[in-house]
Length: 166
Image 1 (cartoon, helix red, strand yellow):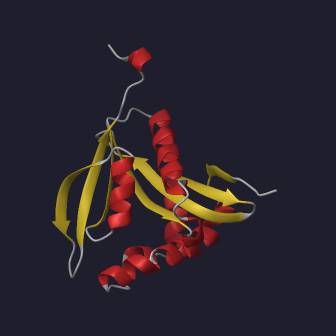
Image 2 (spheres, helix red, strand yellow):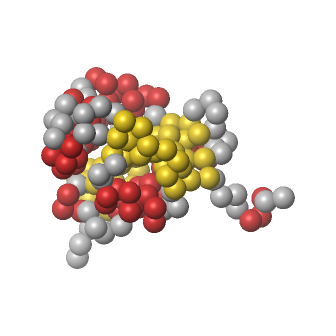
């Protein structure tokens, strides 16, 4: 009998596993752009602990192992900014990225009013772009980020439940 993946809030005890997963997950991005100095690969444990304090950070667990993570925070304009969606390479292609994305959207919208969800990815990250499009995100901009990298910003408006629509 196999275990199922459980999505829950990250805890202080998860920080080392999150950082290791992030490092593993962003190797392919660094290779794709020829840039090993990208922020997800250089983030410190202390910096991640700070994010735990002021972001909604979720993890996907398979038993005791963190196999996915995502972060988000709502800004003063009501835009929920989602970052660092990472799924362990062996777990990719099974819908876990979409589950994490929906879970963080739900958590952020439950905390305070959200008018839109926004995230970004590299312009060559075609798998990420496909995932985000399947989840209802649409491209709203592209900005050079230096070197071989441009960031594609994507946004998804909040869908109000039919019962509350006026």
